[in-house]
Image (tube, rainbow, N blue to C red; front, side, top):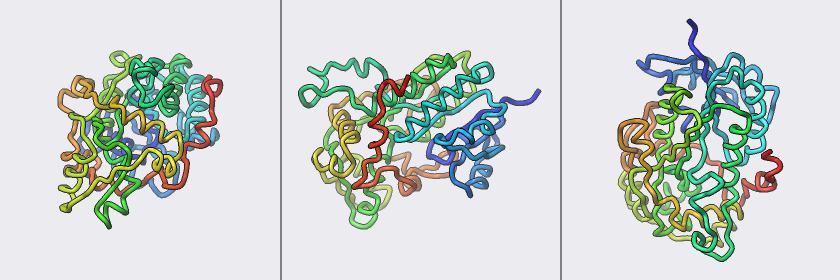
Amino acid sequence: MSKPVVLITSATGRIGKELIARLGGGDVEKQFVVRACAFSPGREDELLALGADEVVHFDLNEAATWPAALDGVTAVYSASLDPMLEGHLAFCQELGRRKDVIEHVVRVSCMGADTNTASYDADKHSSRAGAGIPLMLQHYWWGEKALIDEGLSVTVLRNNFFMNHLLKTDCDNIAEEGWFSNPLGSARNSFVATRDIAEAAAVVLTEGPAKHADKFYDLTGPEPQTMAEIATDLGAAMGKNLEYRPQTLEDFEADFGATRAEFFEYLSNGFYCRCSPDFYNLTGHKPTSYADYLTTAGASGETGLDELWQGNLWKKGEDAMKAAAALTNDDAG
């Protein structure tokens, strides 16, 4: 009997590479034919070496690339960058048209991405009067809901903020001048390791929809940390003194736009301080700490410190969310 085919979108990303290695690399007993999606040419050898059986060109904004990628697929790992929301919503409709053969979709999302985000009460859960649920969190919910509304068997991994993610905009400062900045200050956030998200996704895909369909898992790190504590861990891993310099939300908004700043204001309220038991319940062990993430290699062979210097969507002086912010609930169906 032939093995089922799983499609890994965003395969060259931090989670995607780890997931491929966990499903198909090394001495793993493969339960799937692992088909990896690549947007840019030249990544095939890398993905095959990690454990992919096949590599296909895939672009969320180009529907012509979808049929070949989905041919024979029964399970999908679905991940997309925040500005790709419109493409993701259209791809959900394509998956819905194939729901007779697509048995399981595992979607990467964000902790709190539901219609009752963190039991949100604007009079109690905001740092300024009248603040609503951040648009980025609404977008993550739309991304989940689009799959659910198509009648697909869906599992959602709702992740805390990624370890390293908020530092990537300051890589030059970190390497050359020994400091980084953002508005989070003393607010504690239980940042999650991307390798843990991949491990959870591998468990959910392997155990399948009979156990995990219509389930929503919050994934966090093992402890909430302040920016000063993050600086201490990263400095120790780099063997240098590293300084955190607080930044105002106004300056942060000038750097990255209102939609991104709104989300960081939400983080500053402490909503992401909670440490969820879901990763332990899925895998049987504690989440990875930031210090361990930085200094140890994951299944793909990279340490968190290696990963810090790779790829960054957010550029100072650019509003990466400008186009996505123009979408409405009507666009989400």
